[in-house]
Length: 416
Image 1: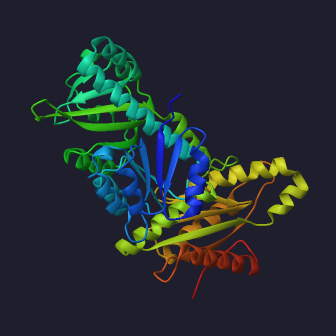
Image 2 (image 1 turned 60 degrees about the vertical axis):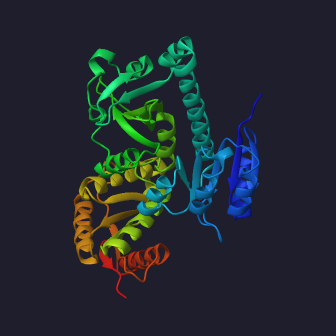
Image 3 (image 1 turned 30 degrees about the horizontal axis):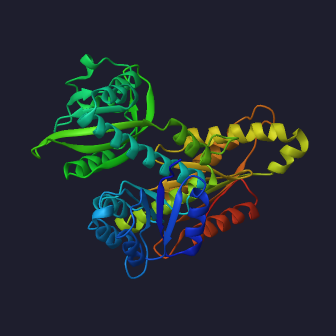
């Protein structure tokens, strides 16, 4: 049985080892520790997918990708970037250089397997489809019923749709033809996602993205969508062709990985990722932001006097109370145990302290179902340009410690 070949390029031996161990059961693996070694190998060997690190000495991932595109044997080989940098600039540059996807490091093994598998299957489907169009009407009919795709003109108006696509979106082909692709918008996707998508595909590049779309039954699903230019035999631009693959299971996995299963809030891992993004935005756009750490006062007494089941019930009530009283722009996570943490974008410490005091009073007045009244202590810290995430967490933790030291049921802001 044929195993696809995965070529992994990374200057860090540990990353190579982890990637290879994760994928070797399903694919033939070849490794390189530099961009030049990768180019040399690819000049003589055809591979199915390239996993390429961006940050490498001497020749980074972008320069390496440019050289690979000039190698006839692998000029069309899909490239997936491996990077710890998820800034907008890096993502745009990655797609501008011809990447089909990027994976953030450190990666989860299951996510890496899913993404590589999707790339392999997508390439197989594309090859199957184009072959069918050129050589075999019978195979085209099979593709029509098993591959979800649509064609549009250059303005995004639908000109063709497969039966598989129509089935997935609960619509007839006659009703779909002539409609604009905007009809699938779920209303939950930020406008900049569509702006970036349009910028990439109108430049003639293939773009792969994950998006939540709405079908004609009013339901939403997550899809991985591959959009390519539709070019005529005489090289005229006809429009675009988009392939859809349902990824609801993958999105659910990602959600589970970022969710605290007791309270339903974001977990600590998710918060730590978001804080890095917020620090990047604060440094680039000179915006303030603050964090609030909350601790339920004397929570151990609840578990000791009422039992852990009641303690869990209190944590759930507490989580709902916080979530209902923060602002729409704020993000709340369970930090651990009876501690919660709130990210407040575009907010200085004074305004964050006002929010914290509002929450403190709300909690103090609230009557929990079994235990009655309970209070909480709050620490507040504002990000400054001298900070990093670790220092910011230390400052808010020290502010919270001071609030408890001074008698609990109060708000203390960190002061340098």
